[in-house]
Amino acid sequence: MPESVATRLERHVIKPGLCIGCGACVACSRGGEMRYTDTGPVPSFPAGEQLPELAIEACPAYRLNYPDMYMVHYGRHPENWLTGIAQKVWTGYAADESIRRAGASGGVLTRVLIHLLETGRVDGVIAARQGVPTPAEARAVICHMTAEVLECAQSVYIPVSMLDILRQLEPGKRYAITCLPEQSAALRKLQAGGHPQANQIKYVVGPYTGTALYPAAIRAFLRSKGIGADDPITSLKWRAGEWPGYLEIKTGSGKVVRTKKVYYNFLIPFYVTHASLQSMDFANEFADLAVGDAWSPKLEAQGGGHSVIVTRTAEMEAIISEMHERMLLALQEEQPLKASEMHGHMLDFKKRGGYLRNRWRRKTGRAAPDYGYRPANVPTSRIFVEIVISGIFAVGRTGIARWIVSHIPERIIGPLFDNLRKGWKAASKPTKRKGLSDFRVVIGGEKA
Ligand SMILES: Cc1cc2nc3c(=O)[nH]c(=O)nc-3n(C[C@H](O)[C@H](O)[C@H](O)COP(=O)(O)OP(=O)(O)OC[C@H]3O[C@@H](n4cnc5c(N)ncnc54)[C@H](O)[C@@H]3O)c2cc1C
Ligand code: SF4
Image (tube, rainbow, N blue to C red; front, side, top):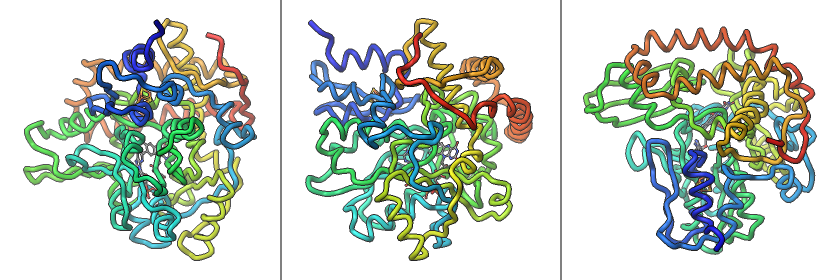
């Protein structure tokens, strides 16, 4: 008797620790649910439930054939495999200062979601909200009013299951959703597979996504600030204040902890999610609208918050242009290749690093997702760089390394790590950028 879908998901995805907690399989189930654990949301199904094949076909941690999906969704492959298909690339921000300041970079995603709602293009917006059900946690919520969308502004750097909520959509209504890259891809697969609620989603928007953290990082961070587990978290913002923002945590005893985004990056080697390492999609290639931080010295010097904005469909481009004309968004058109230079480091981390990490897992007999394509050429020097990066992650993930880092005061480890990171970035930059401007792929997955 063939293995059930739930058993295959368990064996190939959940047990090997590859599940990214997107919730696509649960969206295909009647009795399943996402359970939140220390390593993010994980699906659970009632014994004996028969899931449709679509539940595993849409699983981004199993295999999602990006070249095939490009043909199905866009009717063509991208010219630029680093950033995907683009109608136009812009930099800019929400003209309304309060929305700009509330957002993670320029408040563009929040402004667009509000516009979609206010112009009646959608009846509801599904977004991630920090603080639900407790201040340290985050969940997907359905918003019907501007104020609710505004409350979801900001990036959430711990995993949030976005797709299981599809089962709650009201028949006949249209929605927009925010998704991380693999969630957008899984959603497109559900839509192509005829999933009825997935097809109620009219617009998929989402952030560029480099790395996310396991929830345990929050307590480790507080420990490094001398705050014990008995002091409850009453509020958490990942990117409060002036762009690029700082992590702000308030606790029951009245303590307020604020740390620059660049300083709490020290948590990444110790608590980075497996999804961040296995993904080859940085620029949210299946979102209609993808938005990242506009990391350019000129814009950073201006302050205030700037985003890089990629429209992937003619319809989304028309909406963004309309918002530009109506002065809801302040925008400047950019040359796509030049704009991608802002994210060369992360594009390399995903496109070549992700490929190498998945390939090494397979070579050592461990499961890894297959995205149906591979970089045409990875220089040997880049392989050496990856050995160092993967070595750091392998050591950082151990219990002893996590214990040590949580006992070093953040005022020491934060700046120390920031300097090490900058030094390493500068030293490895020539290798990481080598061949990136001419990045080509081979379609057909890699031969392990
Ligand atoms: C985990 C993560 C990693 C990132 N890494 C990078 C990076 O390496 N480089 C880079 O340039 N940009 C990165 N970004 C994107 C960046 O932080 C901003 O989200 C992006 O610039 C959009 O800013 P904004 O002001 O337009 O968004 P906002 O106006 O603040 O709106 C953000 C919207 O996205 C939703 N959202 C936030 N987090 C999640 C989530 N986890 N899952 C689903 N929906 C969510 C919110 O609900 C909100 O509606 C990352 C974002 C995340 C969530
Ligand atoms: S579909 Fe998503 S939630 Fe389900 S097993 Fe795969 S990655 Fe995990």
